[in-house]
Image (cartoon, rainbow, N blue to C red; front, top):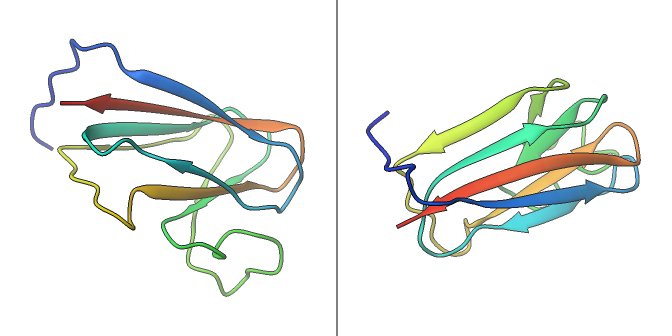
Length: 104
């Protein structure tokens, strides 16, 4: 990955995953150039770039998994509509994901 100036203060957003197997979302800002999603939950976190891919019964959904404490990050991105939204779900309720994003 290329260099991203992380000297700017990033925006940190906790995403509450209140109920197990329910889809929650986070929409990144238009000028996002890098991001990180951390699974702060004790349970497995599922994420997808397509709605409907992570909720209960989505065994055939298109998603990736993050173990407890796992991190998914990308630098030098250019997110454009409709692909600025990431969809999240957890195997257990009462959990959180942390989303950190850097902008231009």
